[in-house]
Length: 487
Ligand code: GLN
Image (cartoon, rainbow, N blue to C red):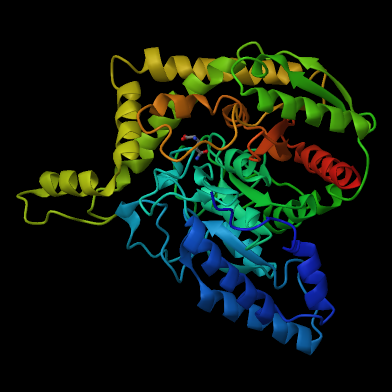
């Protein structure tokens, strides 16, 4: 077993990097060069990146140093290195979504979240590895090879934002962007021992996000420090004319991460998600988090979400149905790599292109989704799943009548061994039982580090909040981080 490095100990937070650059203690170029060197070292061991972007990084860093020299006011993330999941469009380098059908795609425009983060001074180090189109929980379904967990290279980093989680955990960058359709920010965060924050649906623009399942997809932030989650969120929130589902949200996330206690906060521990379905260490970790919340002043009681365990089946029907529609565009004609031009006729070339461009996991999803939407089956599968989705959302809303936050495990296990689920994709799907609820209901959720299991692997716990109450999660994550430091 090889661990890349003791993560998070010597790596600096975004706000500390910013402070040092503003004070003239270090240059942004120096910070960027160090991050790029770290990225290469970590890449060799973990495969966290699809592409490094040294030119863009040094260009952005030099602009920050120029502003420092000129005495210009510095934006809040000036000189802070960040990484973005490779399903977020960024011009100047490929955007592959981890899929070979997009291996040659260079976006002509920037995703809004990327444009905004960089407008706030963040420095792009690279694009991180993911399961193709975000379809997976281990990054083993990436067409660019799996991401190895920085704590143990025999284990997966989680997915689908496995590269972002590994890059943050290994200390390459303090902040990375991911996307979360059914848990893809929170689950790898849990497996790698970092924070993974998925905001309320509509808080961050999906413009420039390679679509997987549009009613569930949301951009999220991975970081080691809750204040850095706040800084990144503040830079990216706000309505976007290019995404009609965005809502006006104020930039109050960093303020929510200021030190404070949790007095008066009521936390409901979701009973249905604890117990036998989880590794014992996971139940312990959730109870430890409940105790830490109590120590910070919160009041913790049990809560019921009776249909919680039905969520994951309906999630896979809805996600695959939407994916089958979203992925129809990769036909090798206007979009995606074209192969098989020697074949007769457009349909044959499309078939050849799609067969070549989509891996087994992607094909499985498209087939399931197409079936769930097919005439004669649509009501029994897609329609029923939509009704269960509504029920789960209603039950969560009812649970929030007696609680400000809900608490559960993030994942039923710690990071599993590479290849462990190769023969049994269903087992991997079922492990989204905890995370998919927030996506089904459009709610914000965060995975916070919650100690280690008996093998030394990180564990996480998940907190959920009502829609648009994202600040409560940042506040709780900050209080837990302060408590962990004090303890
Ligand atoms: N593991 C889930 C899936 O495979 C979630 C993925 C995601 O959130 N992008 O669909």
